[in-house]
Length: 428
Ligand code: HEM
Image (cartoon, rainbow, N blue to C red; front, side, top):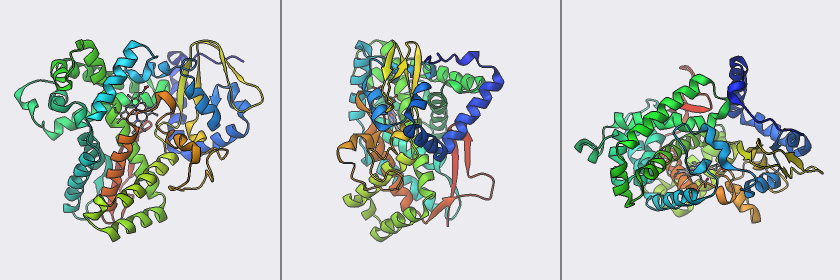
């Protein structure tokens, strides 16, 4: 069996637009993706022929074999240069990984995410019944505030792209918004993958160049804030990478969580009533309530993971188990795809996998519960921080009067490929 070595630029424009359209449609209609996953779990040999695995055991197995299945599959979609997520293990990978752990240790979540969620909710409440955009007026800012310590004292300089006096303190919100849009499209290319149309890729590359340029001007300030003496190339690679990998993915995940929750009216009503009964400030202080909301965040992410599919390069000829009687051959130079969304619903390991059940006992499969963040050694280092931030964001929303998508005045959710650009909400 020969896996194709994918050549994106060899695709004729019509075929590229069509396949990208199908890809985006599937991303928005995850139930179809789940149904496809169920078929491939049932007949794993079929997926194996196309380099696809769906069973939880097979997905975990591939993700654990980091030398046979390489993260370099991401590299082609990293428009602002190389970074940890697309690297093979080695000295640069290890040093960058240490740095990301050190930067994450500086975060102060949930304190920061709680404070910003409360501040933004207060402002939204002050506007009365008027609608608001969940992404633009809430999530973006809650995540931004929580991520500030990644750049610490250099945040203003990074956002402004300069080291003028003005950038030493807080820079203007419009400038912050511009920065967040730029990093959104850079991260968006990682989600859109090599199927993205050339126009979209060009936009992502333009934003990637702009991000590199702004970081390039302030590497000294970033190095000082980080307390490192690395070369400016090392600082630039890490700063650029941290900028795009941290914020947009968390914001998008938050929007997906809310979208899924609002589609489950009964669950939303129950959570809302719990929050209402506790009232403020107890909703923010009650550890039991926080734990409940956190469990919901994880379960909502299971139903709508931002990366329903992960890819890996195959550097050398190998085989992978799929769950079929025979292993699937994986020729060197090809790629494999892991349907993580299918693994998250594999009833062989997840009890009552199709049910929405935030307090499910995962037993010895607890690690699989976090598959939305990858698995094993290459799992997202920010996993627990991100879950805390989304928990803060959701608690804040539960303190508002009942919410629903603002349908009626055009579409409530505007998409740009697989990305949600805005999600208009209103209170009822
Ligand atoms: C809800 C938010 C997030 C989700 C769903 C998420 C998801 C993921 C996933 C699935 C991977 C593994 C990709 C793979 O194995 O191919 C990953 C890796 C990574 N994530 Fe996140 N992520 C989130 C937030 C963040 C944040 C806030 C940071 C901030 C620093 C971050 C930094 C990274 C890094 C550096 C890697 C690469 C790790 C490695 O390859 O060793 N992520 N993330």
